[in-house]
Amino acid sequence: GVGIDGGNNKEWEDKGKQVSIIKRNGKIKTLEEEINKQEDVDFDAEFETHFGIAHTRWATHGVPNIVNSHPQRSDKDNEFIVIHNGIITNHKNLRKFLESKGYEFESETDTESIAKLIKYVHDNSENENISFATLVERVIQQLEGAFALVFKSVHFPGQAVCTRRGSPLMIGVRSNHKLSTDHIPVLYRTCNYSSFMQKEIFEQPESVVNTMRGRVNFENNTVILGGLKDSIKEIRRCRRLLIIACGTSYHTGLATRQILEELTELPVTVELSSDFLDRSTPVFRDDVCFFLSQSGETADTLMALRYCKGRRALTVGITNTVGSSISRETDCGVHINAGPEIGVASTKVYTSQFVALVMFALMMSEDRISMQQRRKEIIHGLQNLPDQIKEVLSSDEEIQRLASELYQQKSVLIMGRGYHYATCLEGALKIKEITFMHSEGILAGELKHGPLALVDHRMPVIMVVMRDPTFVKCQNALQQVVARQGRPILICEKNDEETMKNAYRAIKVPHTVDCLQGILSVIPLQLLAFHLAVLRGYDVDDNKRLRKIEADYVPM
Image 1 (cartoon, rainbow, N blue to C red):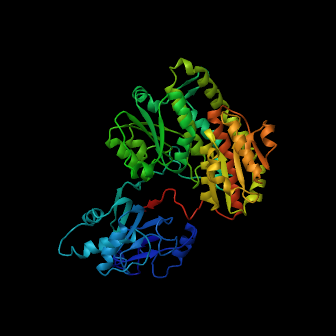
Image 2: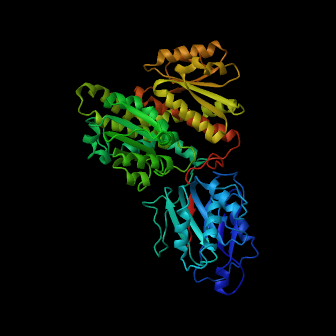
Image 3: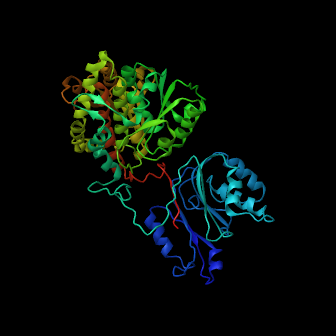
């Protein structure tokens, strides 16, 4: 929706004291068409100062409809309007208080309580000559949670107030110079792909190269991460490593935990940011805490970072966004250089974060003689990784045919263990978030402790079985699935005839060193999720039930 100076009055002051709100469901083009239909707005009128606010909103409170979209308003006269990115955690208490004062709410959003609250504060400050900024300051003192806010009011024509706590906010100033795309990715195109998600999946051979470029020397088997260079001695002296993240980034931590423990010889804990905060987890000065986030603005991860800084732990950021809050507030870090990720479902950032953490493990172990052969194997694996990813991507049509058999199913189970437990969780997450199918990543070692009860000839079961230290155990799990008339779809190594004998379908991937195999095994699941979503009729880049980063736009 948009909020603009409205009305057809010829006097500027009168025009500035009217605000029109225009909202529509769906794409921005639909909103543009609705704006052009407005009869009570004079688009030829000239303003000395014209200010509008707009927001593309994905629902966090209430269903995504016109009433719940932004801007939210204080009353039917639109005295105050506001757009908001974030979550107000005390909105129920604010709503209850304002309703007791006679304010009527029309939406289910937490944001409407802000619009009503600023009118309440204004109406009770009529005897004071206070500025718009002061008014907003008084309002945000009553708010709990994370927010980036932009306010507009008929009482302060030509003005707006922006404020933030926790959530990102960027202000662009108009100038005579054009915005260059040489260093800022302003315009993105899907090129020959049907969606950004598909494009980003197929960009992974290049994105992992960009993550390694200038950092891995394949001739002398050395790794240098410039962002950690000055802190590496302190990191080596720590008592433990904590990896703190949400969603896909959390799965990256799980995927690399084993190799981090092996090469650093330190205990490694992987934490979900929200749970980490809920438990008030003990953190000590000699801990090193890693914070993983594509955007560098993930609210729970950012709060966890500040929690750890308050306990004087060394903090390390691994992000894909230069200048983000996490990259600025951590003591040191790594920029993964994966390039812009526009799709809702994270794909190439998963594999680039994966590579970044493996490079960190290699850097930590460079002076350990007993690990040199292992390091050489991994670095050789990194060198071959881009070509192997291309080989996996070449099976896209085969995976599309598999998706055509599965897209009408209501559920799918994905099983694995060892390095591939994280692969299963990540694959299940991708299927959930863009296909709306129920999917569950299961540790194959836990099969007998409940999940086996779900297996029969009707339940799609995907199993990741690789020639690594857990191979024999995974074969046992496979036999248990087959014994219950399960029809396992296997992701396995391309020459593993023994495993393929028990497969209903097999997706073959090339062999690499065990700690990198998870990169190759997750890509078929990314492709499967994409094709399932397309076959089920969903727009993979426009998931109305999820948010990536909401943007507050302030045209001036």
